[in-house]
View 1 (cartoon, rainbow, N blue to C red):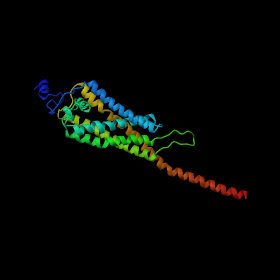
View 2 (tube, rainbow, N blue to C red):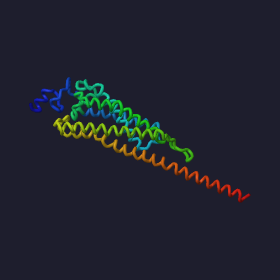
View 3 (cartoon, rainbow, N blue to C red):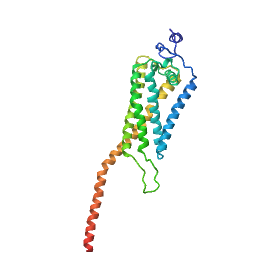
View 4 (cartoon, rainbow, N blue to C red):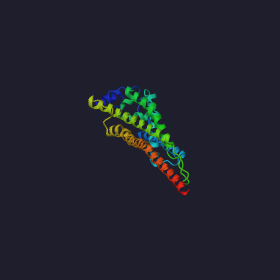
Length: 271
């Protein structure tokens, strides 16, 4: 049975061509409209979170704003888009909601999302329940751990919540490791099936394999690595500062002791 006959027999355009997708109905909305609507929803939510953080903390640096935007994006995708898949995976093939149509479009690069694949359900459930909420919490901690006001004079220092700063880097490390582990499993399982079993879940066209499958997931293999390095440097700096604190205190106490002796001898001399 050739590809054309298989497509006609199964009634869907997904790979493997013999995949069984009950109730599949083609998308009723043009692809540009689907992608535009989905991107608009994600963009408005992400920019809204960044704007709220800037309103709460006008002292946010540009880098922190970008990181908040990243974690807000992760939280939205994990909790709402991937959470939608976890809750409605069985009905997505037949549904015409915007999220269902977006999943059907993406599934041209990974049909496991339309076949209720056990691995995808498990990893997406973990992502929805764990990495989504922790991403939002990390964004909140970034907004509340940086200076929250600009001083009007040298005697009015910026307020800085150092306990939040430590928790921020702890959570940022955990979430970034989780993202790296998840994307490694995602790419790894597909790569194993393709190279060891000769089974491809993506259509062969460049757009679907390199654009959707490889390209759309690549940020979760790059950005977490950069943020993990940032947190590692911050944690290392905190340990170095903590180790140097006793020595600085001893030096300060020594200076006070010498000043006290000089003061005593000065009084005796004057007397």
